Image (cartoon, rainbow, N blue to C red; front, side, top):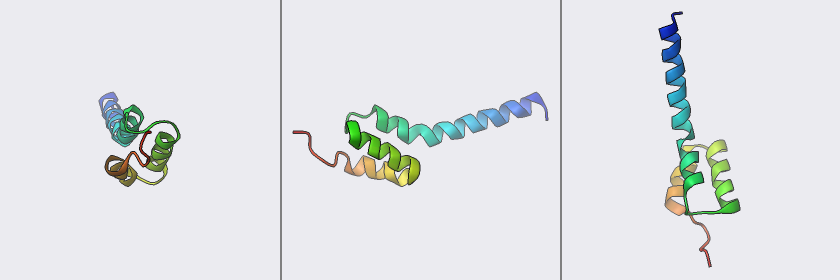
Length: 66
């Protein structure tokens, strides 16, 4: 395999990894939730799927901050 082909494969892998990590990055950087609730949403995205991220966008925060 040529070096350019290898570089293309690495670039594609990096792009796919970034797309997979994007919901986690958005949740971690969000101010909608804090602490344990944020950790639960991140774990849901990791172990369930991107549907958890969609639910995060629709439902978070689950409890009001009082």
